Length: 232
Image (cartoon, rainbow, N blue to C red; front, side, top):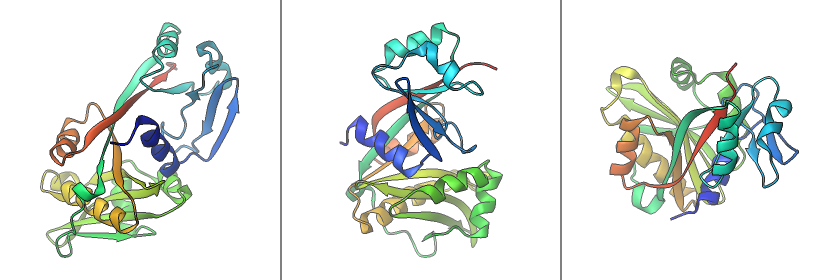
């Protein structure tokens, strides 16, 4: 199994911030409105909880790893609330890869208009599409089909032989009909063709249906993270 550092490095590289810089022990990010993952600060060994609000006056937000319990407690004591506990899963692509059934899944980049529409309906708008555009290395969009129509899409990119599956969105009325499962195995099939060894993804702890799907497919937890945000 890949280690926590490999999983987090692939997550950051395949879903990149617009700008990244270092200050006072913190790694700071400008996500250009692309969501928490590309906007959150991460801490080095010398980072202090009390400095974060001054470094991020508009929206103090930190991403915490499991080994940062002291810093996590310090942020909590300053009033930072916990947001979105998240699990990172991974599995060898050789265990997951299956060629999709005929016309059930296509990999294509740049994304088609219908993919942009499905993502937009799920809250994945232009700022998050810009995150996908920033990703370097092999990448693709995935479009799933059922009943002769597009019913879901996702984004997959590779860093250091680890493929990360992001932005999986299934049209609500077609959920729990196999499209997400087809996308998972199809993403691994694409990644295997690109020379990747692992397929990984991040899912919130609260998303029980998605977690059940990934675990049934044989994916295992690599690490966890969560955010701390200062209210207001």
